[in-house]
Image 1 (cartoon, one colour):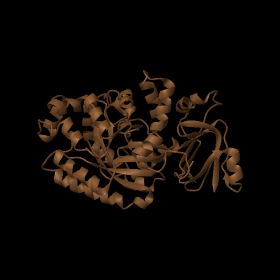
Image 2 (image 1 turned 30 degrees about the horizontal axis):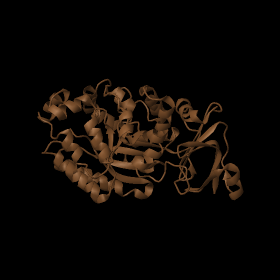
Image 3 (image 1 turned 90 degrees about the vertical axis):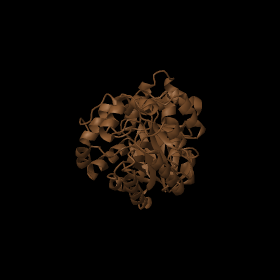
Image 4 (image 1 turned 30 degrees about the vertical axis):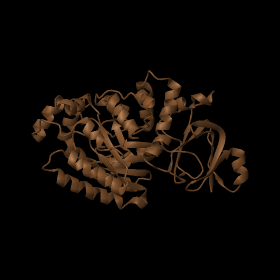
Length: 406
């Protein structure tokens, strides 16, 4: 039995002062420090730090580890030029992105308190890194293919990758399914993939309405995507509409990523079907996609998580960098309310979205913790979420299943 104490412990959205947690691989008890000491006098007490806050481990619901070697290769500023650069440099980035580089990316996430993440895998190159990572990983095998002549081969490859990831569930890896996007997946094969997800009772994720170019293509088969599809696929018409694409997920809650260009009609549909959204503000900014209106999500009661996306469209996988970016991007919202909402988005909300038994500091949950140290004692409990976001780059201590990694 171990015991960890902090000046403040994040419990059900509140910061409890001078609490402690008794744990082995799971949380055994949460109570005021003196009570825990009396109940478990023989527990090993983890070293205490001044100005400390104990959080459940943070969760990054949407990250691409493939292409983690990208620094200055891909073109930022607008979505279509970025997409062309991905195609041009795809082989080079895949060849240089070794398992070791992806393991380094996983360790970087550890340092920013991430104890679980959703890995979106396009080629299966990141499976070994995810299997050896200490974090809990929901491994989203991604399906892509809009050309009817190639979709059967791509679907077969997708099934093979899914089955490969399913062999590692004992290693904290949960197999899952991702749909690349409405413009890149043929509706026939999409229907098969959703049916497969239902059969396997698998988590399902999908990119959706990331850019204005995507919206123009799906609505009118026009815009910047038209020349792209004509050049690469000899295709001058979108394979589906926004409404048709969304309807494929009816009755099966899905984690949609981005949704920056979603209008009220689509957001209402997402709310009605109990879907959720991954918000990636830095990626959206760097690819010129716009800003997700999280106020609309709140009004429609759509849960959202904050996620980093991958190094193909971001400069770090540090979740505190992402939190700060979101805090500044959504300048119209109340600062303290937004801070608390963002903390929930990378803890309890993210855990519910990925169906993980963590994200809370409560009896019976996984003993996944991130301990952070503020530069000084906060004057008010209501400021702690804000000070956490502003002043944290790396966590002081980190535990997964009761084992300390930092």
